[in-house]
Length: 315
Image 1 (cartoon, rainbow, N blue to C red):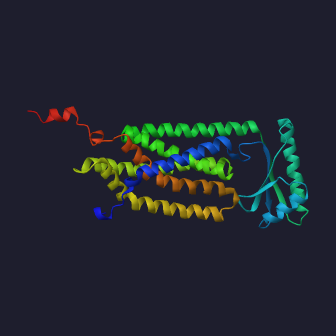
Image 2: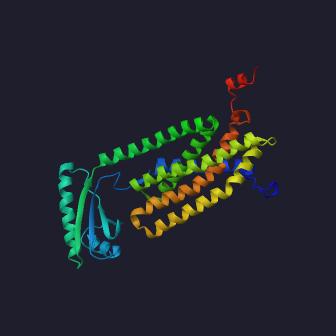
């Protein structure tokens, strides 16, 4: 790109930093006040899996269950348009052993009830998930994200430079916090599919950040003139088309999953759509902003001269 056509990304870096700070603060406050609306994977409940001989009408299934006293039942597509999962809350005071037995009874009862409606319904299975198991899943998932961020920081520090690793980790933390904050603010269910999406967001955002960082390092070594801010700006412009094309094609797939994949994959698709948008933004305005605030210099990125190479040139 020519100099006249360059976009001055870093010209509004302070505004971008302020906006990001506000979004992160709002997200943290929402997470503290509202927490997350955890799905059955993280709380206690009964999951009943059913298969129909024909395509399922979820509205009709909900009506039959509501009329039969299962007002709190949640019905979602499961696997295909002929399979569904019915999620029911359970009484926390009941012993786990009794709950496991009741899950089987409830499954048979619901299968029989829906079969009476004239459909051929097969019970695939019914399971009870305890609150303790859900709590362990939440803790392990959170720990997994922290370990991933720590390993990423070490990798970027070795692959590039410590200042770049700080920028990458700040950008990733920024993406995860804002995505979780949106889920908390709008009360979107958070389940294992969503947790998997959070880890995928880390991978996607990291890949974009590495591409930008690699170009910044290359320009710091290659360009003879220009301030660090100008070199970062040039690098962002050079990688802009790649960033936009990658994000656009990824979003096309994710919106297809959102509208066609059914309710089971909606949380996964929503989390990734938010993550891709925020991740694209953070690779431009967060990671690059952080390394500028840390005063990255040309000397930080110079290739070290090996001592034996100097000796080889001596007589």
